[in-house]
Length: 64
Image (cartoon, rainbow, N blue to C red):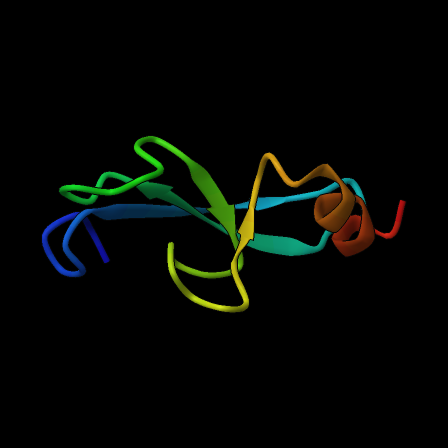
């Protein structure tokens, strides 16, 4: 999916050193409160998404 299909998020994936795949979404929505923010595992606004700046949640996700 791209920026036109959901109103402004762009997506991609990355794998960590253990081979786990994570979905990444960048918030490009109009009138967003988090422009350019990076979310893991869900689109901006999705309850299961993790805002990348949330270090504690990211560490928990990665098992650190």
